[in-house]
Amino acid sequence: MSNLASRFASLLFRVLLALSIAIGAPAALAGPMYRVSLDTSALAGTVGYLDLGLNGPIDAAPTVARLSNFSGAFLDGGVLAPSGDASGDVVHGVVLRNGPDHNFFDQLVTFGGLFSFDVSFELGGGDNGALFSVAFIDEALNYLGAVGNVIELNLVAGQPGELQLVDGEFASVAQVPEPAAWLLLASGLFLLVTTRRMRERR
Image 1 (tube, helix red, strand yellow):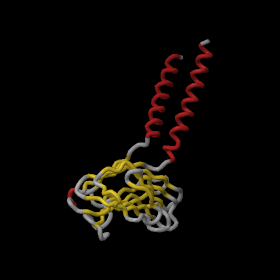
Image 2 (cartoon, one colour):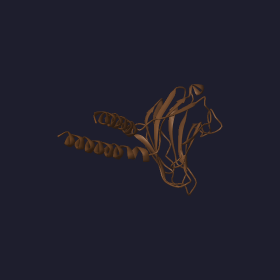
Image 3 (cartoon, one colour):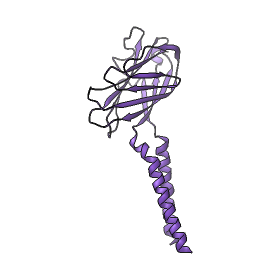
């Protein structure tokens, strides 16, 4: 009977291991997710655009940026016609793709407070990646608060994102683990504890 119980426990262990790998695999293959925070207090009272872009060389691997959980003083209806392969809104989420054109999404805002959003990436293969950028521009489309972008994030599949805070006064970026990655970690710890207990009983 104990032999049967041992076989059942071993089978259960293998099933749980396979399940955790199956659940965690998409997280391992997906690109990184970041929480972007922007402090625009130095631009108080200025009306302009939060400029979001995803661009790369013509031979860049296809990349998708999905932006969500926007917060800040966004002005209703204040969106420039998206250029290139950009769509969505700050309520339901924004999607940028690094198509052959210049790909930008510009949302009208009142600067002076804090803005934030989450951005996740789906990275295509290949050596040439894409550049995700954030900039502040005025209504005449001139840069505000910096010479150019306040954030630049170079993205190449299989490599860590190369982050440049062009002006740290305005921006901070933190990588956020995917929920599936947390689940994979929890499953791994559970299986580790279970394995140790099984060995102790033998």
